[in-house]
Image (cartoon, rainbow, N blue to C red; front, side, top):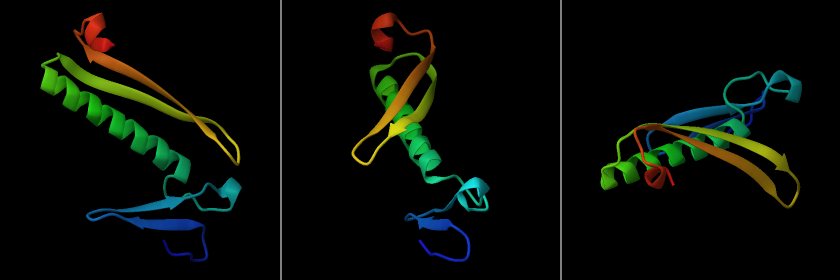
Length: 97
């Protein structure tokens, strides 16, 4: 990332570029999602894609997956993340488990 006049991080993967920023209350100008939002979105995306691939492989009638991710607490030694998963489709309780 580059550090300019504003608090931003310019992130680059093999194919994509993402700008992370901070809200004004933390000194930024809201140029993009903050690092917590990126972490939460990455975990949600990974969870959704993993569930979809697993259901496809097993032939489960999964029509969608919704994931709610939230960093619930942080300290210098630990972060706690809540991840709730909601499955859509005519799944049995065993398939949901």
